[in-house]
Image (cartoon, rainbow, N blue to C red; front, side, top):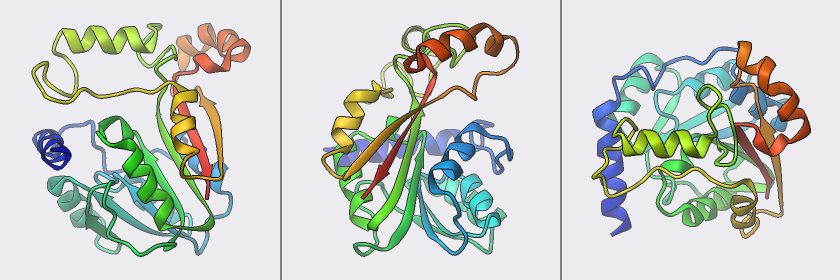
Amino acid sequence: MSHDLEALISGRFDELAESSMFPHDIPPDDFALGAVLEWWGDIRGRLLLDVGCAKGRFVKALSEAGARVIGIDRTWKLLQEASRSQRDHSFVLSTATRLPFADASYDGLLCVEVIEHIPETDRAFAEMARVLKPGGRAIIIDKNLLGIGYNKLYPNWIYKEVMERLGRWFYPRDFPFKERWFIPSSLRRELRRHFSQVEVRYLDRRVQGVRRRLLAPLFKALPILRPDIAWCCRK
């Protein structure tokens, strides 16, 4: 049943693969890239895995920083685009819940805005931990259900709920799976079943301009309201 659902989700990604929501490149000041590099430190010579790489924007950026990076994704059209634009890098067609790699293969792993689309997150986390070397680091970044500012000044959960009801979200209203955003503490508990250390970092660099000036005092007083989360894990 879960395999069938994953196939349906992958089909939806195939439908949208050519849209602007899947860019080929990532700006050097991107908030998620900054969080990844801050958690890992010097990545030169490290072997890294990008789970849910889409068109390979993180693979490209991290390779340019000196790492060896493998990208995996469940969606064939996205991987075709990644392979076409980055012929020197390696991409593998795979689901996050069944990684085709040996135990303790990678120094680090990233998973950016992907777990919201995975039905069996616990199984995916078990696989991520399995392929990491002892002491290896993983970073999982996604939207904060409790946050504010993903769009304008709306609370994240209200904005997502309204847009889904209006049928203006990633999945159609009648789709059998609903994109999930997470409460920081609940996902941390789930991750602790597979990693020895899990640190929650609240991210606010998605918010810029006037919105940032308005929300900065609130984010400083209550970091839990920042719109994005990085769960930084050590095996």
